[in-house]
Image (tube, rainbow, N blue to C red; front, side, top):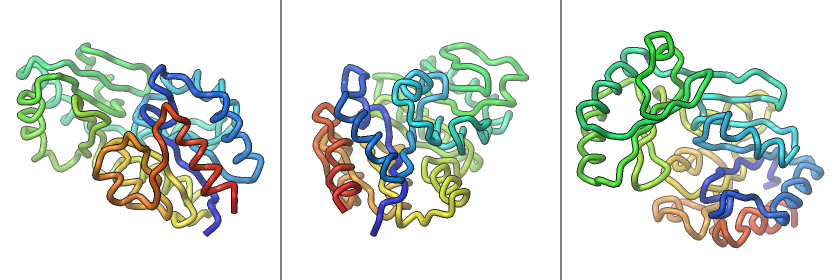
Length: 244
């Protein structure tokens, strides 16, 4: 199998714990692009929190933001956006008030944190998240939203819940890119560490888990690389994508 596209999570995967990308990793990503492999950032972050990294890498490659709710087919394109239903955002606002829980997310225009969205903003909410160290409160909130049929629920840590429109995942985003560029999902390598990478791991031909990944990712990975702080992304790309 020849790898034609590499989808890379950011936090806990591409980035070191200091939120930096190592020189080694930057060079390896450029080697992959030079070899004709598409290198895609696939992250739960909003575009505003990706921009500086994208500019630093300067790869001019597609980006999947907000867990697949904001897809950039090319570096210069407008994002393909999939919004939550307004009535679901209304309900989520009611629930965060009821549980007194920290919340955040992205609209088409901005990042919001613990700020009640206007009626208009609620029509354009790409992703809604909640965050708390209180395990019981987080579990109770999760139980309350399980019955909402029009949302997709995941997380990127043990202290948060991330909510998108139904079916919107990183796998959804990568599939859109593959459809556009006529690449088989079997020819995709992905790297990740968290629950919001799970659907992508199930969908692609060569999923690689970080050493610091959750157990459920490691169980279905084709390979496990070293941790994010040990340049696991660079080492995996060199071993599995560039050495063949």
